[in-house]
Amino acid sequence: MASESQRDEDIFESQFIDMYLSEYASISSIVREALPFELLATVGGVIAGIIFSGMTNELEMIPGLIVIYPGVLGLRGNISSTLGSRLGSAIHMGLITTLDRKNPELMNNISGSLLLSFIMAVMLGFLGHFVTIALGFESAGIFKLILICTISAVTSGIILSFVAVLLAIGTFRFGFDPDNVVTPSIATIGDIVSMYMLFLSAKLVVMF
Image (cartoon, rainbow, N blue to C red):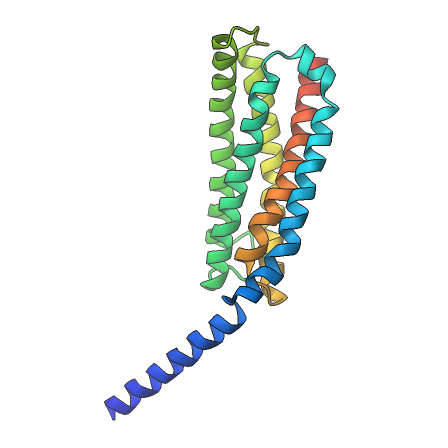
């Protein structure tokens, strides 16, 4: 009796693995789901560059801004993409099913992402100041650079956290694998949102 039960479990497991490989892990499925979003990611990078090209005045008025620019984009992309991956794993495990503020798994992931954004933004402001000076250029000041990094990182982090949650839950409900969709999508949206928030933060600091 036990051997028959074990055999049935082995057959079910084998069928489940075959179904998973054919539906979610096949080469055609991965390419079909990921390719459109990878193309959008490329377009998003171009749009972020266009926004950056409009920051000429801010770059001249805030020495050191061009030094923190790559760091802000990398910071936002790394943290938000990691959040998207963690949400995808949690959804596959059944820990997250809806946008529920009482779900500790969901809220811990979002809170951790925002806290990381704040900590890394402060460190990036410090580094941007000292690297600018080390390269022999004039810096706008450690306070201004930290303020710009913090405002842009936290505001874009809030926006992208909300987008990541909606994307992860929504794509899974429509039968897509969040791991193939969320990361490139967040990378695209993250570049645009981070660049725009950096632009607004720099303008705000210049005004005051």
